[in-house]
Length: 236
Image (cartoon, rainbow, N blue to C red; front, side):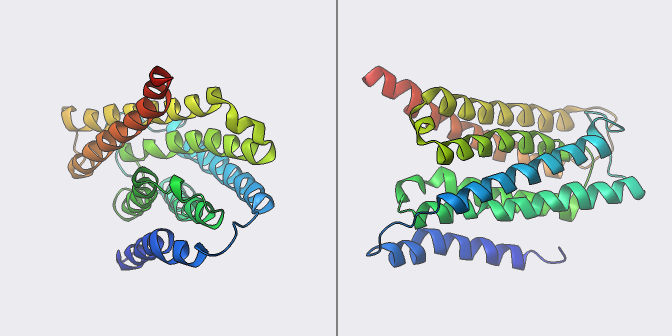
């Protein structure tokens, strides 16, 4: 984590791979049948997210962390939290990039949207920043919340691959998006709380970055929700 260049290189390769190199390669090829690989991938993601959620609650948010203005410690438990929660979360965000690769290999380029790509590369950058500068304390509440959301999300993905009838269920898809919007709302309030908290010695700079980031994601997901589940219903 000494320098951001390896992470930036991974993001650059990711963007070029899913937006140019791989689509060009797949242009004259049939889509790959990756159902077995995706089933294993989703199961692995669920296990990893459960692990990080459990560790984050055990080592911090259900044991010794307070909700507002929790400092970054330097004891043995804090080092455990940095490794088992923050760094593990960063590795998971790198694995998440495979979501887009699977889309392209299955020739579902329409799902490689700005929202999808921006969200994935943004989460890699955010997770790197957490490990580098704030591997514990107030700013890391997003880890258990986001891990919980991803357990729901990858469970849904697993079901749709296992049984394609779930793809036709708007009930599932709609509520997965709702959970994501609720996530950004909670985190937005949490980061704003750090800015307005009195007698708090924590630096506010990370919150100044995460507030507009979460607001932007809230707006993007809300726009997607409106177009997909509200406007389309009105049009029909």
